[in-house]
Amino acid sequence: MPAPHPQLNRHGELIHLLSTEGLPKAIMTQLLDTAEAFLSIHQREIKKVPLLRGKSVFNLFFENSTRTRTTFEIAAKRLSADVINLDIARSSTAKGESLLDTIANLSAMQADMFVVRHSQSGAPFLIAQHCAPHVHVINAGDGQHAHPTQGLLDMLTIRHYKKEFHNLSVAIVGDVAHSRVARSDIHALSTLGVPDIRVVGPKTLVPDSLRPLGVRVCHDLREGLKDVDVIITLRLQSERMSGALLPSSGEYFRTYGITPERLQWAKDDAIVMHPGPINRGVEIASSVADGERSVILPQVTFGIAVRMAVMGTIAGNMA
Image (tube, rainbow, N blue to C red; front, side, top):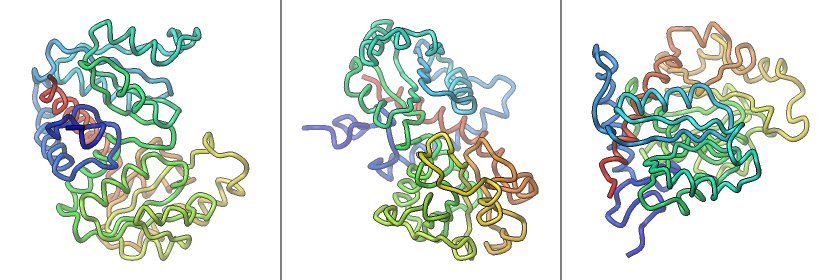
């Protein structure tokens, strides 16, 4: 019997985390519950559990990252794993070796998990298809496609502050067109039963082609923020844009930046999130990013717990 999804084994258990798309609600909820349990570890004097003792986690970041790579490393070490950070700039791929040959060699070094960030969409899926059977792959962001652990930590943040998903309105504001975080969030929010998901921004960054994802497309910020419970702001990803999609970052802020005045359009208890890094004065005002409604720093703490939950759950399903 074939696996129902490339992330699952024939028993329906998680063996890779590649995307929130197609991830069953039961598994998503299990990961959030596990992550919530791991939050208490951060308060201990000794912040370690032995779930991955004797296992080797290879961080393969073919694309720059600070926050994601660091939180994955902290998470793996808190699970007692041996962590190997591959220096991609000096690796065999920089010398012309193919991606799959590199993966084959690393698999032969008895790696147990690959945490992969790559600029090409689909690279973690390719690696999962071709790595040795004993190796498990976690997608830490691929191109414009997916960033599943960011999506899950966003869901944990929302659940922590709002308790339920079934009655929420969520606005995702900014460069949705180029955002793997937005796609992962949209799939996760849909799976968890959020009835009102809005994507907000200029037509060049929030095209109508996003509607098939089950979202409401808003090009007017007031309409997009009206009575929402959660605002997820996104960074303008100029490095992924081809051509001039915006007059200027200043013009973007004047029209779509989240300011204290615009925050009043949302519900009084609305929370403000951001996957980072923040461009202050571009997508969000400093007074909002540092304000009482901001949960941006707690997101980072939740991110460590979620990445521990993902690695711990996969380890429990290892053959």
